[in-house]
Image 1 (tube, helix red, strand yellow):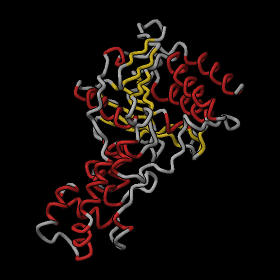
Image 2 (cartoon, rainbow, N blue to C red):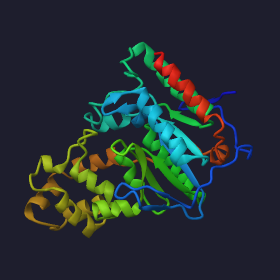
Image 3 (spheres, one colour):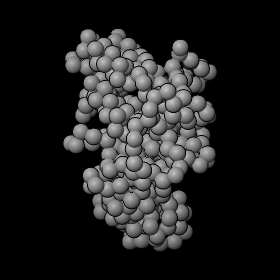
Length: 333
């Protein structure tokens, strides 16, 4: 039976059962062999219980084209190879979720195609059928005993960041399944990402070690660096568009020295922090850089509270049947 808790801001969809050990758990070791760099790298689980988040919207695309078949493909692999019986929470963007950031920066995600407004299965669907596609996904996740969180006016990223903080405060680990690079600012010893890798047809764990190896800095610097460099995918302009030569190398050097964007801008306002072009850029475009920070920083203050039942092991009994049912429904669209 579906339980829907609805307030002015929150829509929670769940046909949810605890796993009371009626289903034998798959046998797994205390690590998973998955990596963006090497298939033999190890993602250590340790003794802390892990809670998984599934960022639904991004896996509903094949390239830049909305596609329900893509969702089926990736969620099937995710259930069978990654999350297994572990606690899992699915999060979907709420209606108007981008608006508060678009008010700060009108170009923010201006070019994005909205999945639940324009959806493709084997053929493109009309706008009138987009709502049905949305409901198909929610119903499927409900059947698989996955709570689905969608908050009107909020982006899924902020909801995940808020709930992840609450879970970390309970002494657990968090694994976020999403290709969205915004989540890299959350990476720590207790927060990992798991990314869909189309070239390898699998999900791949991405940890603190992977981040440091890739970027040669720690994730605490990620947000400050992106504010300076910008994010073309999300429509956030970087300073190099205004000041040729002020690229990642210069930005990384300055952030390493001063620790954060705000520290750097404060220092640049009272004394010289680098070469003349960098100094002039930081003083001239300080307001634009702070604007970028407000846009790119994930919020952790969304009005949602973790529920105890979301942290129980997931009953996977229905997964296979629910997947078969969803495939047939999609093929029939």
